[in-house]
Image 1 (cartoon, rainbow over the protein chains, first blue to last red):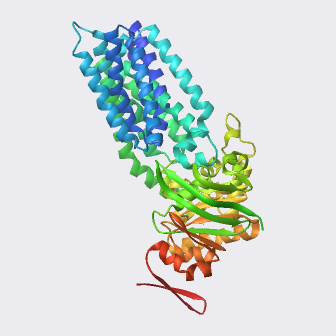
Image 2 (image 1 turned 90 degrees about the horizontal axis):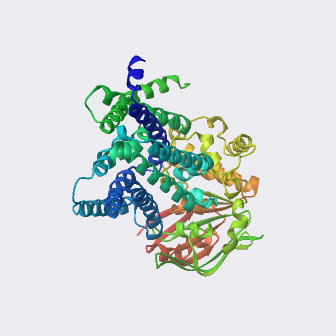
Image 3 (image 1 turned 120 degrees about the horizontal axis):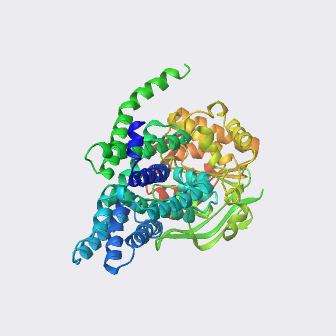
Length: 279
Length: 254
């Protein structure tokens, strides 16, 4: 407790902790659907595509977070749309967007003259420089996404389970799926500020993947995903406070350790469940 | 008996390519209709056209007395069970959760599902799986999963049930059990059943009529007539001999 109060004596650490908890909640909620709908590669694809948007914003002197968000959400929704219309698999489209967005980013960055600290903050993340404005934007994104998820939770779950059955039942699968993709894009852009373009995919994959390994029921999976996301964000921040590790990398490493732990625990849990089953 | 499905010269194209042409058949109320044909014949596409999931390019299709363009009006009356490959086997749902997903419809969005537990239990009772409601779906055997999916397709009390390859991947006893369950639903509940299968023998023995397609219509009629018809050989592009010995059928390949 002393360590925590010590850490929270600094204003920037208070903001960093709040940002970690907001993003931890956001990512683990979205991660639940990303893993169930098998969209893990989408996270990596969108984050790298966002680099093009960020670079465009810097060149055009527009807020790079805004242009990056437009790119991230646009890419996410375009992927879903093209996959549905063009009958091309999502991973193929993501692969194309991934490289194209990166290429655009690299091309634009190569035209830069001078030093852009924002660019490096967005590439590798800088949770310690989070401002009050950033916190407000993160809270807003969290509010919008939690509202969307809580309003359409049962429908989104049915779509993740079997899109065709949901469609045959008359559910508006297209719009709901597009909404989910937009939520994933927005989450990625918000999280880029914490861990950067390079590492953000881990935040929207590991909490859900860990929970998926250990759960046989979506209710426990959702709770576990939230727990892992929050523990990873908080734990990573603590690690980076005491050791010379960048916070973004520390958060991802803590999450990776938790996932490895889940892999190790899984067989023991299975054995326990088997022993509890009535003969 | 009323025709619940009436297709006249039905044509379906996917990505600009004609998948089905000139399909004409009708499915009578309270009967089991088997849709048969070789792999890639368009059986699943036909089922998807009946469900309104793919657009009809030519011809007429009427489902439960309503043209396909107005399918929304009668959608709750249709139960659907897709192929088992269409979902993730390890999906973390309990058996009752899987059944409850069948209750979701445009009218249930932003609403609580009233009497959900009671309705789900009734559907599980229909298929004799009520004691499995709290069991994780992933822990069930293939046959048990099929029965849960059947309960899911029955949960809205449909008048017509469409099943796509329900026996695929099941061992023989599980296949037999499933077909017996369908027969029971047909007889006791008057359900009209449309069954897509590549397993000619089991469908022929269970169905009241067969519709044999391979991109186009080949033959439609009572199983005994269809099985003896040269159109069946044409559709499968191979020769069948069905030798009847005391009512049993034996299949020989040449």
